[in-house]
Length: 568
Image 1 (tube, rainbow, N blue to C red):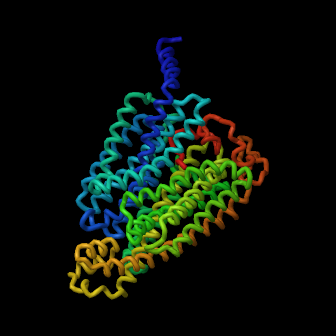
Image 2: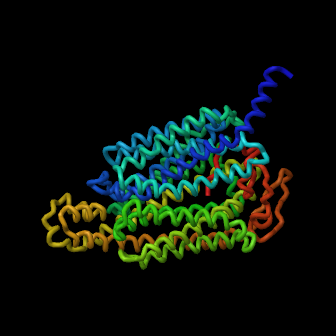
Image 3: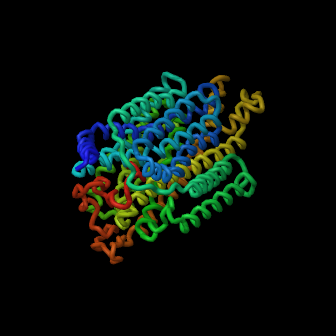
C-alpha cells in the first residue's frame, strides 16, 4: 500500500470520529433557513408600518416573502449539482457566506425594493445550504448512525420554526425592524467557523452538468406567474398587461422548461419520476398543502397584530403552537400510518388543516387567544401528519439512481407551494381590503387627509392604523379592521377550498399502489393498502443507512447525496 493510500484510509477513518460535531454544525446551518422564514411571519406588520418600518404595500410584502422562496425553489436543483461538482463543504461555505452577506444588506435596506433583492439573494444562499448539509451528513456519518443523524437533521426545521417567531417578536419589541435580519450574521459567522474547524473536505459523488438554461426558465417562468397573481390583487384588471401578459409569459416559459427537461441528457427535473402515480399524487398534495399553509400564516400574522392587537412578541409566542403541532404530528404519523395506511393519514392531516382554515371565518377582534392557539396547534398537527407518509409514498417507487432527484422534487414542491400560497392569499387580501375601503366612508376627522395619506389608508390596513394613531382617530382604525376582517374571511375561505382539493387528491391519487421497478424491469410491491407497495409506513424502518429516518428510498447509490431532502 502506498503512502498516499494509507493517508487516504487514515483520513476516512478519522471522519466518523468527528461525525457528531459535524452534525451539530450542519444542523445549525440548516436551521438558519427555517429560522429566517418563521421570523418574517411576525415582522410583516412592522415592515408595513410607515413609521417603524418601511411602509411596504401589501404587494411589496408579498414580494418580500415570495422573492426568497421563488429563488430558493428555482435554484435548489443547481445547489445539488454544485455540491456534487465542487464538494459539499465548499458549497456549504459559499451558501453561508452568501446568506450572511444578504442578511446584513437586508437589515439596512432603505426601501422595500432593496429588501426584496436581499431576500432573493438569501434564497440563493439557502439553495446552496440545504443540499450541501445533507450531503455532508451522508458522507461523514458512519453507516450505522446515518439514519439517526438524518432524523436529527430533519427535525431542525421544527426547531427553527418554533424559535423563529419568539426571536423575531423579542427583537421587534426592543430593536428596529432590521434586527430580524441582522441576527443571522453572527449565527452565520459561528457556522462558518464550525465548518472550517470540523467539516472535512468531501468530494462530490459524481460531476453533474449544471443546467443553466433550465434554471433560468424555471425561475423566470414561476416569477411571471407570481407577478401576475400579485398584480391582480393590486387593483389591476385580469386582462390588463400587468396580469394577463406575465401569466401567459410565465406559463410559456414553464412549458419550455418542461419540454427542455424531456430532451436534456442531464435534466434538473427528471420527468421519469412522474410516471409513478404515487409520486405525482404526492407532489400535488404537497404543493397544495404548502400553498394553503404559507398563505394562511401570511394573513394570520396580520390578524394577530392587527384586529387582535397583539405585540410582535406576543404574536410570535402564539404562533409557536403551530410549530409544536408540526413536531408532534410528525412523530405520530408513522404509527398512525400503520394503523390507517398512508393514504388515510395524509387525508386526515389535510382535512384537519382545512377545518382550521374554516374556523377563521368566525374570528374577530375579540376571539380568545386560546382559541387561536388551539386552531394553530391543530393546523400544525395536521401538517405534521402529512409530511412523512406523503414522502414515503413518493419515494417508495423511485429507483435508487433517481433517489436524489426525487428528494429534490420533494423540496422544490414545498417551496413552490409556499410561494404560490403567499401570492394567492396576499392578492385576495389586498384586493378585498381595497374594495371594502373604497366603498367605506372614512370617519369625519380623516376626511382632511392628503390624497397620498388617504390612498395609503385605503390600500394598507397597517398604514390606516398608523395614521389613526398619529391623528387620534380610533374610528379610522376600526374601519380598517372591519375591512381587513372581510378580506381575511375571503382569503381563508379560498384557502379552505384549496385544502379540500388537496384532501380529494390524496384520497383518490394515493389509493393507487405505487410500485417500484427493479433492474430487471419487473414490478415490485407487496400490495399492502398504504399505497406504497412496500407495506405500511413505519414497517420499513429498520435503520437502513442513508434513508430518511426509515421513511423512503435510501439516499445512496446512483442518486447520490447533494440534492437535499426537505426537513419536516
